[in-house]
Length: 193
Image (tube, rainbow, N blue to C red; front, side):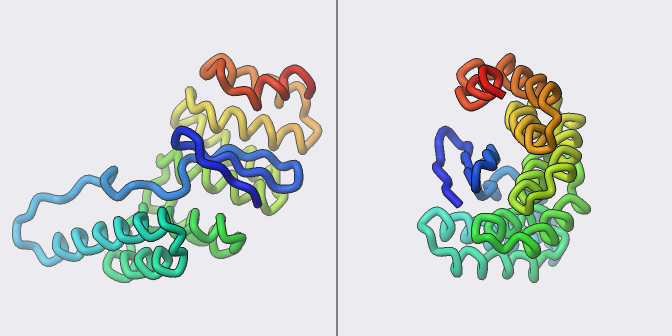
């Protein structure tokens, strides 16, 4: 698996499977912190978010074991914290542990079904598993939530191309280009499907 980070987006290439995914690990600062009213559950939530943040920091310095330990701690502290499951799923995906990634991303989506980053992560996991039909379904769900999501248009096009659905793939690449004319990958697919 080859990956390069550019402007908050990761481009993953696996044996001619080109997948664009959101940045590898989501930020815990995107999750609202509850009002401190002395409730012990608030303390667990704060500690879980702090563990997610530690995991993010560990992951950024390529400390996979430390990141995994932090995400595990966050899940132990607050099992219903979607971002912890999503981040652990992305870590598992990036490490090639696709079965574990799929379990975690499904749990994340049970907790937050409209999280387009998680939906796209699910699509990328299916793509890496070679299940392009399920990937198309995931990217379609992401587009139902956010029709302008460039990464979902592009990735759905790639999965459709693998399924032999070339006209639909070109339509998806074109939709990605309309929304982001600088997406060279989509342009190259439209030019030579």
